[in-house]
Structures are given as structure tokens and as C-alpha cells.
Length: 269
Picture 1: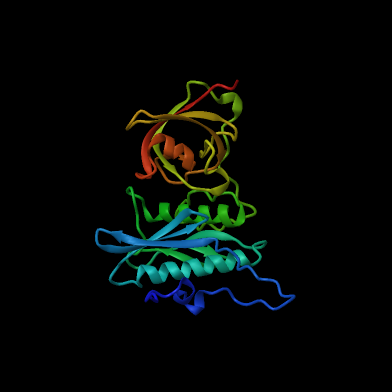
Picture 2: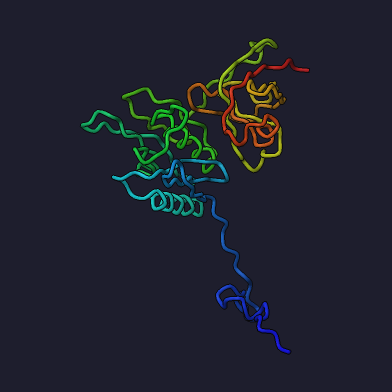
């Protein structure tokens, strides 16, 4: 009795089969994209977040007067991947803004003087962020992930930030001799998933010297972790530390994304 079910080979579409290679040919592997996107709903509105190396850069949300968020996100992802495949040696990423007649400044991320991303009403602002905070965070994350460049400082309005990636300086670190074991900060912690350190107990801090060891306490649940400072950030007011994925998991704050914390500098051994 013959089966009515097709064989696995017969059920595979022709387009999904591996291409046939001729003798002497080598299979060409496509470059892995550096930027990706994720679409979802927020209160019934479409939202799309753009990631670079698993780190969120910007979230577009549905707005009646603007292009659909999926279209905007797809365009940004395509431009970022095209940039990553080329030479970035002379590339600059800067923050700029204009003052339209309405009086509300429009902030934009520029690459070599050309607009890459505009922070307008179709960009999601979270945690009482100002447009300048969102634009600055996106600018500095792109500078770090694409160029390995130091962050731009918060702009002093109305002067335009035109620092190049190779010449901008990060905030000065606190001298080691001034650190005290009793140094304590309280504020908001965030986390980011950067592949090289995602499984390490590390964190970014705006000013503490690299190598400083701190204890972070989640004030919501009392959980604690000890992390080593190895990066700069976060660059948003009221946020005091950016934790690795592993540290955020230990504190139980991955799903929430943010948590009120206490940061204590531990004495050097």
C-alpha cells in the first residue's frame, strides 16, 4: 500500500535546496549583517527596534504623519550593514540638530555630514527621555560599535556638536587616589548585550577608572553582584551604570530593562 504523504525530499521547495557547485568552485559565504531589526506591538501600535551587534540603537513607532516604522527601520538597517561592509577608516559619526519654526529642536545622527537617523515623533522615548538623550545614546553606541570611537559629550545648546570620531575625548576618569571604599551612588541601571562580555561580570560607568570593582545592589529585590568596570556609559541623565547581560540576569532585571540600584566602590586588594 503506497503512502499518500510526500517524501521529505519532495516536500522541500526547490528554492531552499543548496546550489550545485562545479568542480573547482568554492562556496562563497555571505557576510553576516551587523544590524538587525525586531518588530512588535506597543499598546496596539507597531514598533520596530534596530539592533547593532544585539545592542538596541533606536525604536521606531507608528505615527500618522510619518513613514511606517518597519520601512524606516529597514532603511536604517540596510545603510548600517552597507557601512559595515565598507571601509570605516575616515568615517565620522556626529550629533546634529536644527531649530524649525515650531521651536522644538530636531536631533539627528549624521555620518560624514549626511543624515542617517532623525529623532522625531516616530522615535520612541522611554523613561522620560528627552529627544536629545535618545539621539546622543544612538550616536555614541554607533560610534562605539562601528568605529570603536569614544563617546561624544552631551551637547551644550545651541552649539553644534561636530567632533570627529578620532578626536573626541571621553569624560575624564576619577583619579584612582581619590577613590574611597565608601563611595556610593544611587540611580538607575540599564544593561546591554555586547558579545565579547555578555557572559562576564562587567559594566560600563561614565567616570570610574577601568578595572574598578563595584558592588551593585538591585533596590527592588535586594540582589547583589560584583562587577568590574571595563567600558564607558551610560550616556543618559540619571543612569549611573550599564551592566553586562550576565550581571543583569543575576540582578533579575533583564525583562524590566532598568532597575534602581546602589553602586559601591570596593577597596582594591
